[in-house]
Each structure stands twice: as C-alpha cells, then as structure tokens.
Image 1 (spheres, rainbow, N blue to C red):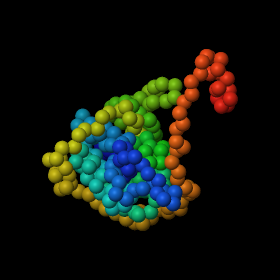
Image 2: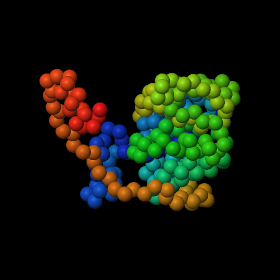
Image 3: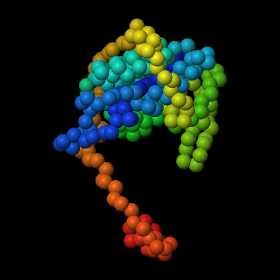
Image 4: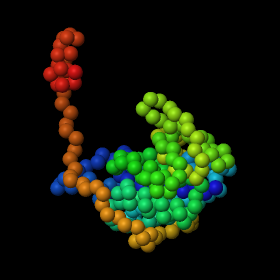
Length: 248
C-alpha cells in the first residue's frame, strides 16, 4: 500500500506572530517556517505504518511556494520515500488545496491519505473532509489512535464527548490529532540522505484546476491586551460581578 501525506508550510509554532504595519497580514519575512505540527504527526504515523509492514511507500506532497521544498526535505529526512511540490505563489485556500490534492490522489492511487486535522495558521479544518467528499471515499477525522488490518482501518476519534472508535474501509482519508504520536527527531545523516531522494516540482496550473478565492481576508489585528483581575470578598460579590459582566 502507498500512503500519501499532505503537509503545509507554516510559521513555526515557537515564533510569536506579529501583525504587519498596515494590518493586512502577519509578518512572514525573516520568520522561521516549519511543517505544520499536525502534518508532522501525519508523516510520523505514515512512517510507522510502513515500518510495521502495512505500507510499502510514503509520498509527501505540499502546495505552496518554492520555499516549501525545505519542509518537504524535512519530511524526506524523517524517512519519507519521495516528495512532490505543487508550486504556486498564490494563496491556497482549503477548497483549492483539496482540489489539487484530489488530482495527485488520482495519479498516485494511494491506499490511504493522511493529513493533519488543521493547519495552525488558519485553523480551517476543512481540507481532509473536502478531499474525502470529492474522492468519494470514507474519512476518519481527529484521530488519536490507528490500527490497520488488511483493507480496513480502526480509528479512535477525539470528539466533544470523549473518544469514539470507528472502522473504515480503505482507501480512506484520515486526519490526525496531537495525541496520536510524537514525531521522531531528524538527525544530520538523515538530512544529508534526504538531499538525494526524489523531489518533483509541478506547477499548479498544470493540474487544470480553478482557484477562485472563496474567502476574503478583511484584515488582521492582535487580540486585546489582558486586563488585571479583581478580588471579591464573598461568593455573593462574585456572583454579582459575573452578572454585571453578563456571564450569568
């Protein structure tokens, strides 16, 4: 079985995000970029499935600028077999990303598609569900546990009420949550080996999909500064204060 893993280039989660001067976007120039943390977990899970003999090949793909090759090389250093970059300088919104991934899925014919449940830059949580619908295949989202046996996968999902276990037939789209695994540390020898692994670059236009913007960014602003708390002398005063703020 072949596993296709989608990754996204985002600002590193350790970086404190800043708004640019005109308030139209966040500052990205000179900022450390990394693989989206949820996507990194998806790569790790694909590698573990290959090491367990469930899969034979792990292919990582990304849609974005040429600089995203760096993140693809990181995934190759983790152990992925090959990579594909769908290069575009345009903003890639969720529906366009799902359509591009569908074209890759149709050409690669994977037995499983693994994605992070969401990207930490827009928190959209849409691409996996859209891809499954357009591909007309089952989906298992927000998973924190995964077992594969033959042509079925048993997934433990994290839902509001707790944990839910479902079984889906393969091929399927699976989106992963934070508690599924801990990604491996990339060593220098692995980084050097990754430079020799195949990385194909294709233009988004070559896929023949339309990318009309579905969302419009009206502006960015930082969250309001937190104010200091107040002390109350009794429970009655606390209840009264909460009522004044409209909480109760």
